[in-house]
Image 1 (cartoon, rainbow, N blue to C red):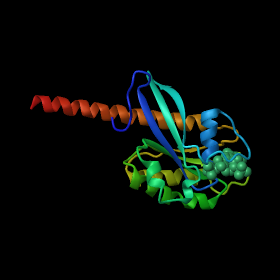
Image 2: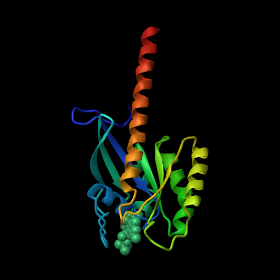
Image 3: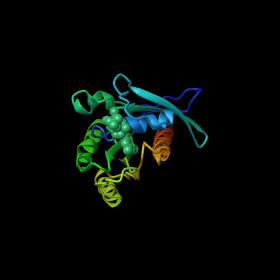
Length: 199
Ligand code: G3D
Ligand code: MG
């Protein structure tokens, strides 16, 4: 398995990244998942690289590192470093910001350039707010279009970091996909080994 580390205490270690425009709620989503809270007026991103959470998927112990961009959304030159070794990603926009929705192509492209076919979930955040500018249908349609272009399924989910709605589900879904990928890649390697022995 590439980039995931197996040890006695956990079966998988997955680096996951959270990308999207500034202010869409990447830090709030990460914080809500890791700490289980929403905090107004925090500027905690700078200096914090990632948070770690443990999950159990089937019978596997999974350690998840969630990398928050730390305001690096502005610094495209250093972002490749941030993407390195990522095995899954959330691409986030704010349903009250048309602009953040329009910029999704850029984030998708950047993931494709820096990572190879990793599981991705498209996340429309801030659904607790009334002033929605992007409909659920548009989000779904965009995810379907990208799934076609990229050749694998990109699910679309809507969240609120403020109320906590669907945050756990987003990470759960992503982690399950990453476990699936890792197990599949291990299986392929085993098969290749057997084939080699046969020859
Ligand atoms: P970023 O990390 O993507 O840059 P932040 O975004 O997590 O810093 O969030 C930007 C602002 O949006 C913050 O407000 C935060 O509280 C708010 N926010 C994040 N998620 C939600 C949500 O689901 N619902 C609502 N209503 N607000 C959200 P401030 O005022 O601190 O800048
Ligand atoms: Mg942030």
